[in-house]
Length: 181
Image (cartoon, rainbow, N blue to C red; front, side, top):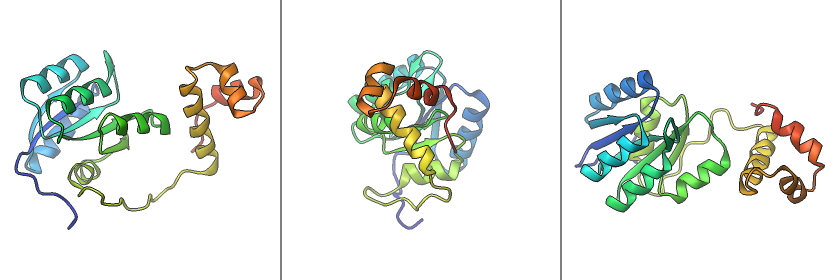
């Protein structure tokens, strides 16, 4: 943990619509010295950011009333130096890329524990993360690529199939299945 930043301003916004997770993470981060505020909707998160932009934020990507990236965008307008970690239960490469483009410093899949989140929030700029314990399989990497192209094509199956040089029905079968491990 020698490559962690030790901040002076420890204000932290936790935005997640999963109440038990949100409250558990808030308690864990408070014990680690953070001044925690919690929210469960995009509207609440944006209001808190406008009231007093925190130095740190942990934001769920998919919320009941919208996309957590809207809060990331508002936070970076109010405080460009804010360090944001995006959490999601729906991880794929396309959303990770979007999160980073909006200013997130890291992107973690749920369930992430408080130590992983703390490490991501306080990692020194340019610090390389440890290699994953369980890297994605080749099937998963292929599935992620197909999902990214599908999303970039506006969820148009025919256009996605054309760009991937694959039969449309084959693509539909792949899209209908769950993601491989």
